[in-house]
Amino acid sequence: MRYYKKKEEIDRRKADIQPIGESLKALMKAYRLQGKLSEVHIVQSWEKIMGKPIALKTQELYFKDHKLFVRLTSAPLKHELNMSKKKVIELLNLEVGDEIVKDVIFL
Image 1 (cartoon, rainbow, N blue to C red):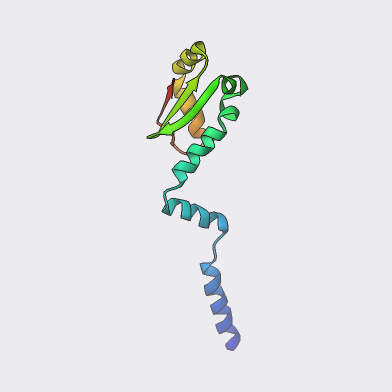
Image 2 (cartoon, rainbow, N blue to C red; image 1 turned 60 degrees about the vertical axis):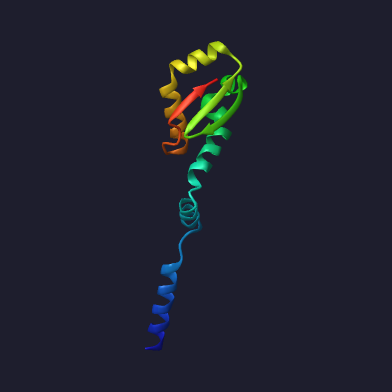
């Protein structure tokens, strides 16, 4: 009989245990950090997402109110990217798996 009580206590303790990944996700959600981390991920992955030629002509990237501001050194590239703004937004949001970027403004 004593063995079963210990087994029940162990099972109860195991129920409280969760993987560290889930714990970190819950922590980021509780402190509302996931959005900021996704923004940082997009900025760091800009070259991977858009390609090296565009990254070389990019001066600055920053977020404000779910808008990504991109300062470019090439006016023709700015015009080309403005024409395909929806596709750029889709690519960026696909990278993080959430709708973080609402708009992209090319400066």
